[in-house]
Structure formats: C-alpha cells, structure tokens
Length: 449
Length: 167
Image: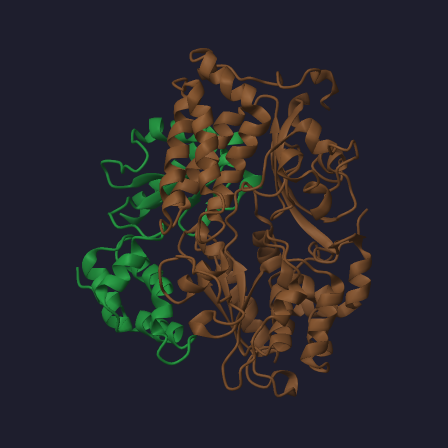
C-alpha cells in the first residue's frame, strides 16, 4: 500500500480537534519552521519538487521565489479553496476532516513568505466547512499558533476565511483576488502577476489547499525525502477524487507510480466498474482535461502502461494523451453517452464564463446550443465541424484559461468519439432512446470489464 | 420590511470589516451579502443591497454588479426551502436527470419555479464539488447526497413537517 503523507491520520477519532491533532504530532512543522530562515523553507519546498495541486502543476517553490519583497509593503498568502472543477472534491475532504493540517501548512508558508495576514478563499457552497475551519482557527489561536508573536517567535500570523458566492471562475487566481476585494470575479490581464501585484496591489501568493497541506510533510521529512516518493517530476503523493461509474467513489491518496488500470480496477482504489459493465472512457484530471477512450487511457500510444502521474497522463500530448489536472477522475461505463456528457460540460462552462472575453462569452453558448441540438437528434453533420471550429477559436484567445478549459473537453470528445457524434446525426430517433455503447472499439472484448 | 441588521449582526459586520486593512472594507461585500440574504428573507431586494452599500460606504452599483455576478445571491424571491440540484457531468452520469424530473413531477414545478404555497423552489445548478456522492443537492447550509426518489420524498416530508411545527 502506498505511503500516506496527508491522510495518514484521517481516521483517528477526533482528529478534527486541536487537542487530538496536536497529540498525534500536529504543528511540529511550525515549531521547526520558526527556527529556520524563511529562505531555507522556500529552498526545502523547491527541493521537494512539489507542484501546484490545483490543476496547473506549476512548481510551488519556484512560484514562491517570484514573490516581490519591496520594503514596507505587506505581502499576502491566499489559499485557493474555491474547488469547483467538475469531478474534483478533494480539498473539501481535506478541510472537512483535517482542518488543522491546512492551517499548519499555511502558518509555515506564511512564515516562509513573510505574510502576516492570510486568507482562505472557500467556495460559498462549502458553508459548513467554513464553520469547521473557523473553529479550528480559533483553537490554533488559543494555543499560540496564530495571533501576535506566535510561540514567542516575534512573527505575527493572522488567518481568515472568506466565503465566495458561487463562481467557478474564482478558482482562477486573479479572479479570486478580485473577488476577495469585493468585486466581480473577472480575471486580470497578466502581467503583472500576483507575485508582484496581487491582493490590494500587494505581492501575493495564491496556492491550492492540497499544495499548502503538503508543505507540512515536506518540512517534517525534508524536501529531499519528499522528492524520493513518486517518479520523475511527479514527486510526493497526490489526492485523487474519483467519481462516475466506479464501485468506490471517493478520495484516494496515491504515490504517482501506480498504473491507471490498477487505480480503476483494484479494490484498494476505485474497485472496478459496477454491474459488470465495461470501461468506455475517462476524464482523468477534472472536466477541463481531454477525455480519453479506454484503450488510450490504459496504454499510451507507445504501448506503455499509463501511470497516474503528470508525465504519463499527458504522454502523447492532446492527440493521444490527457492531463493530471486537479486529480478529478471521472469514469464513464459502456452505457454512457459521450455527446450528453460533453453537453453537460459545455453547459457548465457557458454558465461559468465571466463574460469579459467575447470568444469565451459567445463561444461557450454556441457550443452548448449545438451540442444540445445534436444530443436531441436535431444535429447536422456540419454541426460537428462547426463545433470543432468554435473550440479552436476560443482556445488561446482569452484573458484566462477558462476559454481553454471549455475548448479542450469538446475537442477531445470530437477527436476520439467523432463516430458517436455522427451516429447521433444519422440516427435522430434512435439516439433519443439508445446509446452508442462501445462501437468505437474494433474489438470491445479487449476493453477491460 | 424594516431593513436594519440587529445589533448582534452589526457587530458581526464590524468583525468582518476588521479582517482587512484600513480602507479596504469593500472586501467585506461578499460575506455581508451572505449575512443580508440570510437575514432578509432569502433574497436580495434592491433596498437590501442599498443598505449594504451604506454599511460599507460604497456606491449601490458596486453592490448590484457583485450580487448579479455570483450564482448564490438570489435577486428574486425564493421558496422557504431551496432545492439546488446539481446537473453537471459526474452527477448526470449517476442519474441527476431522473432526480430533477422526479422533483419537478412531485412538486409540480419546473426548474427555477416555486410552489404555489411558497415552500419549495427548484433550481438546477452546476457542479457543487460532491461528484463522488452523486446525485446530490444543496439545501440551506448542507449537502444532501446519494439522492434517490425515496430520499427526495423524505426530504420533502422533512421540510413540510418543519414548516407545520413552525406554524
């Protein structure tokens, strides 16, 4: 069984409380960090190879080293807890069951970055988790880990929770900052990057919940030890939230050496597909990443077993690969309709477009309407090409990555499942009651049951 | 309705404003709109938004543009119980379409509508981050997950009973 660095204590009764968390060794990393030079903490994080766990996978230590440090200007750490990528529900789990792990990681990170005030921006719907976090913050404050001069170190550290109000776009870091300033979540044009001009125009680091939690084991074990887990540039452990048509949906902490096949079919993880159905397709990293048909999901185009890590999941580029993304792993069985699934995602992106950039604002609506038309048996062959054309014109032409995120799932669905779209057009009646099934595969026998 | 927070709520407002540096009180807008919506009938009428603008010393337009951007702020009255049912991919794969149909049939309303007695509103929403526990809906501050027709029946009954007791 893989080693757990984040969830190893999640089943200890009462671990949500300060008392139990501390008894189990919690907050050691803060004691250690306060005796170190902040620059050395950044160095440890660099050595660990930790990559941002929100979806982009950018090296965290490098992001931290970009932070500007002008004299007399406040710096801010902001935790991105706006988890909204369809298929992703791991940060919710971390915050709900291990709130002190996030707080501990944030105190260490605040000290490393020289931020005296940090904010946890949490999606508005996670209202009950806001209460859990606020209780935990109060406990940490009572025990001297937050407030003025924490543990007598001379370092002041305050932490607040801010609830959003329902907007996927606020997971984009500059939109999040706008929202935290009490405005609409419209992403900013970059540069300047938040590291130079972020919250209230001050230097700011925005990190995902899981990223900040991972700072705790990195400090405790040392960056080099952390980097020994995993493979290549996929170091440490990763939380995967698995859902869709699997026997055991939920959160799994994996080291990034296991194969996709093992992850889906072994009892330790997803436990296979219910009712003896066959695997049709999978979106391995949250709804924005390309959907892959079963054969390309399990084996790369080079014929190697595909592994659950950044490099292997993206092997082959978008032609034959996908992405690790946020770790939102969505499995589709043989009874699912790729057109319908893609339509719901197009509807999602249309709903969530902030409206600043025309290609995204208009294009996402067009894509939703065309997909609805095809799904409802009213599509024409030229609609498929039109969809392809629209997504091409959105990608790369918007201020923020929401445009790309809306384009990629549609491009991949057409790339790998064009026959299913055509079948809808050719069978306008049948497609309302029947599904295309596994007809993509020349030999469905070899698609694992 | 008299639009004025209680002293307790006003204390909450000042606590929230203290989280931000001097002069950055506009940052308190989202949390205070949540407070206002909870306090003044589950939605944000224009006088309520104007009141929030006064509290934060900002222009009313700054409140309107924010309230209309975020999906959790209701700009029209909603029923006492708001069923927000997720319909995005992972929930759809697990039967959210059937759950939405069932609720519509049971309550005799379409998505976005409120029952005649003003008790229930059905709203279809996009991914709420509960994909592993699908299908699901948000009801007030909590999530109701692994929905089935039987569970929907139980939730409707639970809400109706609560209302009967309160009356």
